[in-house]
Image 1: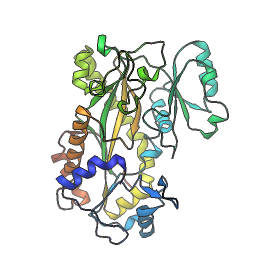
Image 2 (image 1 turned 45 degrees about the horizontal axis):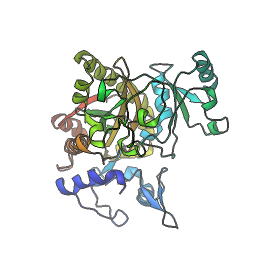
Image 3 (image 1 turned 90 degrees about the horizontal axis):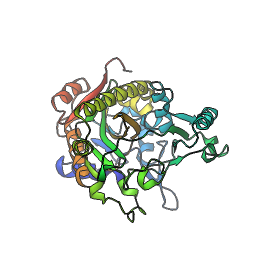
Image 4 (image 1 turned 180 degrees about the horizontal axis):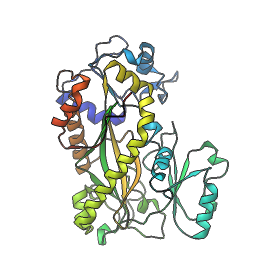
Length: 382
């Protein structure tokens, strides 16, 4: 299993009494956890990611046919996310249906971006890169620029992996809290046909390592990935890893965010997520794995994470929905992740005898724990 599954695997073993079996040798398994994105090894024993579901356990299941799964079997995760909202370019397209000026694609919108930059000399822009199989994460595909000359070259943009966004000034507190913040919220899918999606009632906030200065593009001020702040520790105002992470409620109190702004932040986020998941549904319904799961009566579920900025007027700004969020956070974030996985496993009935497909929604309603349903589409079925 992958690095990103260590914590949930531990919970499954010790709290839910799961044991491992070899899928190549038996059909007598209850759940495959992390078959996508599965690591396989080439002839030189180097790990590779099986993006196209063609190696190892995935090849076995392809050969058997996904519609041959048994009704009690569970596949993690539900598929199709990478072709929709878990890809930054696809997410950009979805969000542009809400706000046409929120982001731009390269090379398609290069002239628009250049013209906008020329109209506002010195303005700050964000360039991101994403694409199927690129595996860019923790800020590695992000840079901040001021001029058209800093855009990717015509040669670079030919792989259709770039997006560009106008920078949104962040909500800032005073003193220690005069720094960018990123809200991180667990999300879950428990069914594709029909789709049911949940948001966790607890979230956490990552603060930037260094104090914010509007004219700067320094990564220590702009990025909020606690695990990738090497080189920032020497900053005179640098926070420790423990100081960088706190609950949303503690953050809102510390930056003096009014209750009305807090409430509207979550209302706006729920609305945006509903719109995005609704747009993603046709693609996810057509995924061959999801179709096989539905046909066979088996089930799937997913755990993801939304990473959200807070603009200076208190609005949510969705950076990404992370398909494989790291469970290896610290302090309060680690607690939230443990609670979220445990509640999710209870909600999908991993501690129960197999639940027939027609009864799963009712079971979830009675066993949500701290998960809240934000999207359900009973009409979106195969």
